[in-house]
Image (tube, rainbow, N blue to C red):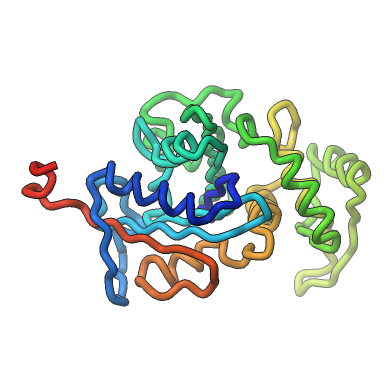
Length: 281
């Protein structure tokens, strides 16, 4: 999963700010027709300026927040002056992008109203150097934690509006089992047993708001998997539009240039300016 959220209720203002960023990046807007993506399409797997066409889509998420989806996936947090940090500075707000790689490796990028940013998580052994801009990630930043964004108000709102939401996973065993059970008792979670083809398994479940609250600096959420954290972020910050906050949305809409299945929303495509046009700027 690769999804960004910006703390604003003004979708039109967000769209205008994204348009400015595209122009500043030397991209001109296009309205491309539907297409069949390549097997290893650059809009899905490429990075930054190497990608001829960028795609960005925004829509209302949890009240007070908008989701911002990008193709390529890591577009908003790449480079020395990441687009997401420039965007939050223009809007005078905060935002973040949460990425989950292969169900295990996580990465969190946060930006504030000053254009400063924080990051945590390794993001996978194959690309950590690029995500950390060639630096060695500090040991205290290897676990994903919110530092610039306070998830408390969003978590409380999600808990009030959707009290029956929950995330579930097979209960951990070993050193993390005690921490998990203590956390479940504190947040009103529960365990239950289900029959699977391989036998009986014990699962736990809790409201996703409590998972998000556990992802704050100073707390130990090591007993929670990346899959559970990703699902919690999607459900809490995605709100009524949570179903459009997974990567299936990008594969089915932005990358093949298909219509968005929700409204209100915006979609913008920016092509790299040809050299002659760039010289005229």
